Picture (cartoon, rainbow, N blue to C red):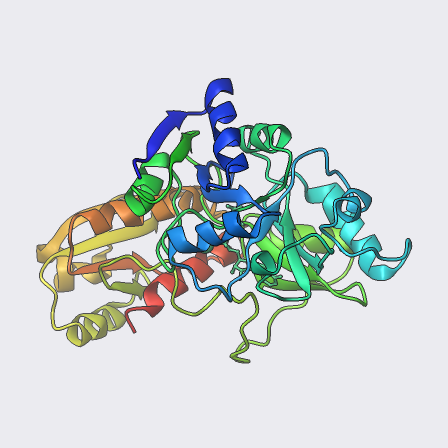
Length: 357
Ligand code: TXA
Ligand code: MG
């Protein structure tokens, strides 16, 4: 099918709603990454998301709601969340998080309501819910008479798209429409937490909402996964994810040895791209003797120390480097993990690099 790309406007949103109502998935910008949205209440429409992405059916989707759905009672009224007694710990914590972080980059995993189809939740007893803050996505949700299931608009296991061009590269010919709302402001996916029966909050994925802000809101520590439990938290968070075509080596700025080890293991690749997280776009001195002669492209994300600038540009610059057909992309390994989005950035880099190991 031909894929149309239209700037976000009243008429294109109207067209999008028609396609959604006909059971087709369309791509839509959000503040995190572009999503591939379909009617969350229609199994046939949701199956088309899985088909377009090549996504395994055991990996559940996030249901996106609009600003008609402001609080927990609204989620229950729509059959999205399971009713919970007023005042119970799970409900109180969910309400506090909703009130503080929606609309925005926080996804809540809660007991699933009766109207969520099995295929959206991959038959789990829970459902992931989020209200995006992107005005275009909110307008679409206001016009559509149903919530929207939406994963990131990439082929399964590839880099998430942060522009309409990225989506086209991933899904051209597989979906009828991309709404072009420019570049995503955050550039990484939402943070996902589950709110447990005892009111504790468990981190399933680092993302656009810093965990310390969540802790300030709930006045309790976010429960982290045990470092080496090997347990799959969010079903889609396999170790290998966000992978470009070229292998990736994650190397600290001063680490000559790690760089040399990576090169040896990859059979001394000839065409190298370098992605630095901060500072000037020049080869770190510790790397120069080893790779300076092979560098075909060098980019600095120019981060200011909180991970925000690097996050916004990471996926698109990785994609850009990948278009050059390089033999290796050397990415600076972040060591400043106290800034706001560094944990999320570190997580994405580790997963992108995992395909190479
Ligand atoms: O920022 C975002 O969250 C973007 C935009 C489009 O909203 N969406 C997104 O969706 O990143 P996706 O499908 O790429 O990632 C959703 C993750 C997957 O790893 C999935 O396994 C997990 O959420 N997930 C969904 N439902 C879940 C549930 N009930 N329990 C645990 N994990 C769940
Ligand atoms: Mg994704």
